[in-house]
Amino acid sequence: MGTVKIILRWFGICAAGVALGVVPARVLSSGALSLNTDRGQVSIGPWRTSLATGGTDADMYTRTYVALTGLLALNRGETTYFVATHDDAGRPLQARCDYDVIGKTIDARWWSVTAYADDNFLIPNAAGTFSFNNKSARPDADGRFALALGPRQRPGNWLPTGDAGGFNLLLRLYNPGADIARDPRAAMLPQIKQVGECWS
Image (cartoon, rainbow, N blue to C red; front, side, top):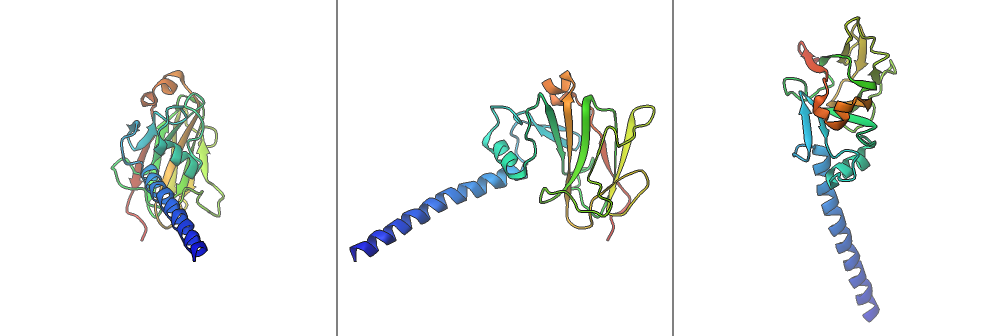
């Protein structure tokens, strides 16, 4: 009988330990992925970044976000990351809607815009197009570029978004200019505008 009590006691201790570990982890990961609280966040139009990203002073939410998504992994001196989950009007990005992403040359050695599904994975598509960068986006003579996002092909630089659920955009600036590396608020970032009505 004593052995059974010892085993039950150990099971109880283990269960309590799991509960004490899982519950805070769930709360932490929920807070990290929502990115809705002000933890050094900087906003430029619909784009957001964290001043703590890639630094030794990154808080637990930023570190958890990096661990869970694999995004925002390099330090700000090498790469500056901006995430957009809404358009310029503040509406959540929806895969069934069409968007124009329009901007001018960004001060960085190389930049890219990539679309991710809500699960933070690339969006499968027959075109095999997941991203555009400062080479493939073909800017015009004035340095302006335009991307066409949506579930159905459109002329120009079309970035497929699938046809269900939401999505987000990740803008990576590799070797950003000194002003942006020092303060991301110096970046001139593209607009995200919904085009027409969403597909049903």
